[in-house]
Image (cartoon, rainbow, N blue to C red; front, side, top):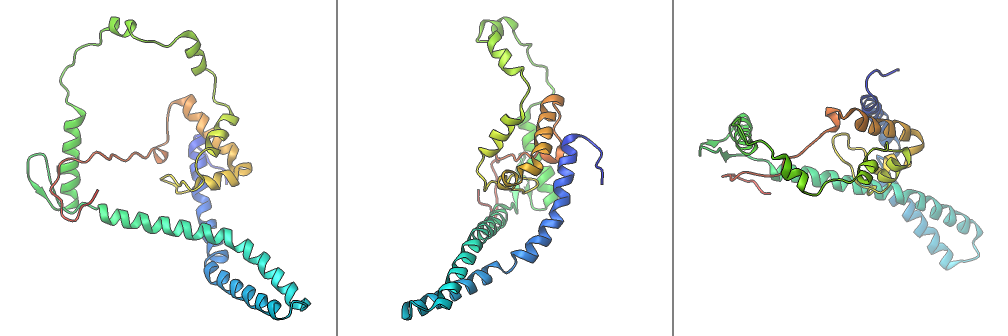
Length: 236
């Protein structure tokens, strides 16, 4: 299926389309990985005990070696599965713990319903932080010119376009366990599948620098500054 739209939109649509396939793969290959790993471990231990009793048992030696190889192949995906599972549980716990049940707005009124908390408390508070429509003094250009400014060499460093190799270096420099929102794909996925997704990723990132427009689905910002609140069961 041909996807129409900007380069970044096409990349996002492709990643979303893969999620169903990955879920099916996870169900078929990794849903019972803990139990399978335990079975192989027990088999390995059994044949190792046989070899302790009879180290000339060729059949036990062959099976023991096969179990060891299979266990090695299972341990890495099992470790990854457990790490992702732990991260998911941690996120769920943190969301439940950080949920706001009640808080006072800037006027001292207690808000209990979600709509009241969002519109009556948070929005009003951040509107007051962001300022008003009052006129402000014009910028004094002389003060700016007298301060430190970019030199011609500095400007030339900002002009060259971002290369594919630079983008790849930045991507591979991020910890593989990171799973930034909103798509939840870990950096390790991009690293391992770079020969497949690398071109789409580099084109999408470069398009942001060229167009100065970032797709809404990829522009997730969390405001962490919290106003003074009167909260029940709310922990930072």
